[in-house]
Amino acid sequence: MITYFFIFLAVLAIASALAMVISKNTVNSALFLVLNMVALAGLFLLLKAQFLAVVQILVYAGAIMVLFLFVIMLLNVQDEENLFSKFRVKYFVAFLVGIVVFSQLLYSIGSFTEVLPEVSPEMTEAGTVEAVGEVLYSQYLLPFHIIALLLTAAVNGALMIAQHKIKSGVTND
Amino acid sequence: MISIDWFLALSALLFCVGIIGVLIRKNAIVIFMCVELMLNAVNLSLVSFSSHFGNVDGQILVFFALAVAAAEAVVGLAIIIAIFRNNLSVDINNVNLLRW
Image (tube, rainbow over all chains, first blue to last red; front, side, top):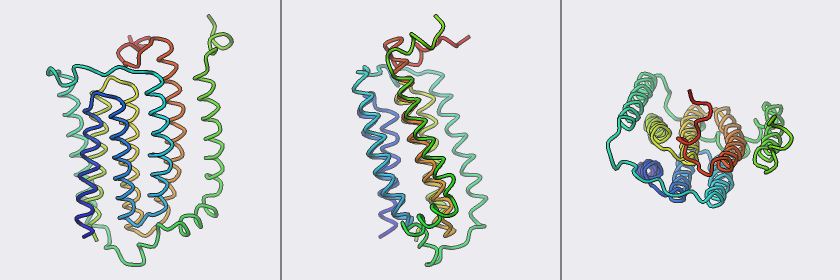
């Protein structure tokens, strides 16, 4: 049963990723990326990482993708034509690079998996909110605060970059 | 229980789809979404190792990667808006000020 669920989610993730890369309309690409993230959240649930599955849907599929859709509809980008309509050397090189990286990753995975131990039942308790929060608020407390500073700085920087009168004071022309 | 190498292979495949998307697309927003896809693929491999070894540290790392990805998305989209304001397009072929 779990195997069928994994196959379903994996096919969904790969198909939505490919559809995101291929589709001409930018809004369709963003919606396929949302589907991909939902499939990844399901895979996190299969891996007993409940907290991260919820955070994945809340932060990625909720907040970040809404931001993407806002920007896409704000900028009113037109569709990208002539993708795959004629053969280009660039596409060939891109697929070659992708296949090379994929084979490298599979080679390193294949040489590593014999070392891994089998999953025992007590190992699957690691992903609950209790376990994650206990480590996050004791051992990783300083990085947690630094992340808060980083988010504040990022919001301020985004406001500085995206506001309209950036040219009047900062640049030298 | 599914063996961990299927999760790792899926992660590698999603990462390579992201690489191909970054290389072949010309829309800056779609390139940015492909970068998010690659981040997600790495997150999947981290979570699978974490739940396999029963160690929470990998999931903490994924949590921090999520926060950094949110900050990166905000700043990147602001940069895309600034680019669009300057040359009324998000096609990266038109952004050639620093190209030799």
